Image (cartoon, rainbow, N blue to C red; front, side, top):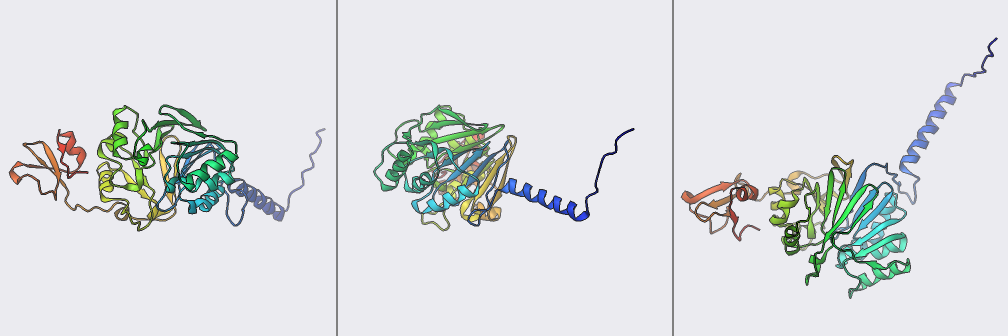
Length: 357
């Protein structure tokens, strides 16, 4: 005779309580426990997360993949507490890589505060010596962890979880500090990110000439969208789907400049800006990249079009040189041909006049 199992039917109240407890455990596991009023995020594996932090007229980007974390630049000295708080919010307890692209204060300034709070496995910079207090403090806190400043070379590779990272530059020692920026390519599955610090057009063109692989899904736009970065030669190789500009609201430099924005329009890149959208969060699943922003902004605000004409570039059929439509050297109408973009003109064999940035 089969033995009967003693199955006691749970009361409805007990069932509801069990469901609520399990739901609470699930939420706690996904989000972590609140600390100092902030909710800590626990990220799933199998994704690359990139946060472009809102540090004003400065730079700081956090990358997390499969439990490993890398911070590229730390904003100004005054941004340190914000960057530290952001890392804590995103679940970071240690950093595998801390990278200072170059020694300007708006890139290195906040890193001393970060190193005072988080242990780091590797600390990189484009140089080990620089005569500012901000850089000296960066070195000091790295040394207090027993970490020497490492200077990477082009061609160096390393991994962050399943993401593969390649150092592309700087190719040589430049007189201009911005040109000495560390340039990183981050590949994750079929997607890629390119971080260029404040690299200018001189170093960009040399990077193109070197044959480095530059095509990227996401471009972190150089030097806050200045006119002296993100040139056409470089951009033609990168051809990003998305372009992220870290820039301060109503900054005195006029960044991002119309020159940089117009080039990005010609490249048909979707623009994101920290001055208008706050923190920008990009997530790659290895096939595509999606974005979330702290605030919303329209396309017209992000990349306003100054040229109203549908075909803003005019080529001279005799000289095979093209101009912006407002250039005083534009050819007469009988010798003119119009182009919708720089790419269209160059595809037809035309060269750019000096009026074209």
